Amino acid sequence: MNILDQEVLLDLFHRYYLFFAGFVFLLAFVLTWYFTPKVLWVSREKDLMKEVNARSSHKMAIPPFGGVAFFLVLVLIISLLQALRTSPTGNHLIIGLTFLFMAGLKDDLVISSARLKFISQLFAAGFIIFSPELQLTSLHGFLGVFEIPILLGYAFKVLIVVALINAYNLIDGIDGLAGIVGIVISLTYALVFYSTGHPYFVLLSLCTAGILSAFLRFNFSRGRKKIFMGDGGSLVMGFMIAFLSLKLLVMKPYQPLVREGYTPENTLLFALAVLFLPIFDTLRVILIRLKNGKTPFEADRNHMHHVLLDNGLSHKKASFVLGGLNLAVIVLFIMLSRDLKSGGMSLAMLGVFVIVAIAFEALRKKALRRSLRENPKEAKQSRKDKVAMAGE
Image (tube, rainbow, N blue to C red):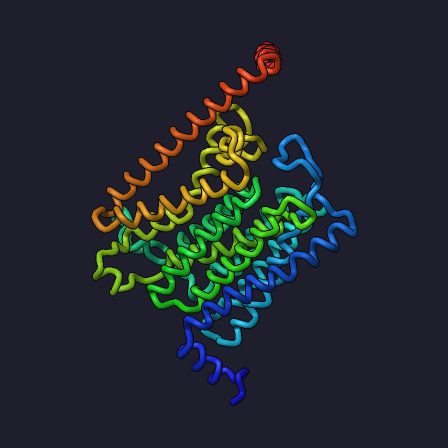
């Protein structure tokens, strides 16, 4: 028996599906664990480190090249999965990942322009939105909308891909956060694809989760093994999450789940619940910046993780709190979606957004009051600066 023969491989895959799933997760984990120390060694030998600046949450120079290991592992595993030929999208996915990885790597090395990264995101999106498996032609009755024009579907998919890549990139601000949230999202997708009979996408979801699980060991390290995923990593992982999200949105209603009470018109809202943290944090930060008269692209310390850090939480605790919040929103959605149609579920999700926004605004003000008590001189100088700026 030739195990590399396509028919033999497919037969083994269908007979030992769960074994393959576990193997892909373990392979991604082990390869990431193997490649990351090699990337660390080269980074330190060549002194390729991320220096500390005013916005940094770290106190020493750290290599920002975890994305190199991500890219290598993804390309290797997706190439292996192509031998199964259960999906035509693998090659398109690799091309899109390559565009984003090169733009992200350039940014980690010498700083890329926002234009270059945006163009790379559009190119990457272009290689998957035309895939036959990702044709978005219906919203399944969301707020009464069923069929949508094909051109509108393409535009909506590009918006989703670009928005999610940037949203995931923005939450990569402290140790572990992007990794933990990515694991919550990808494992949720793995369960959905398993329940609906999409094995190829189960394997891709588990591959993503395996990479991020191994990465956390190095990202949480306090010694010479510490590494950041960098833009090369966050753009690549954001693209994988966007790709899996598109598949969720374009799937036809799975009748066994419908009979158990799942409402297809809530699919878009389910994706919103799964992606809650990156979407909510991005919208929150943009609104705060606009309110303060700044551009949406100007960096600051208004992210949710900054609020938790300012309230005394460590990087690890803040990351697990926010990852737990994302998981709680998913569970809440599942509990409510059996009884609510898309209109009621939209109001419920809006309520969740408002409640979380109020809670974090209260935490932000609490941290500010504590800072004023502990540093009255700095607070007085800050008020003088604001008055001076107002006078100008």
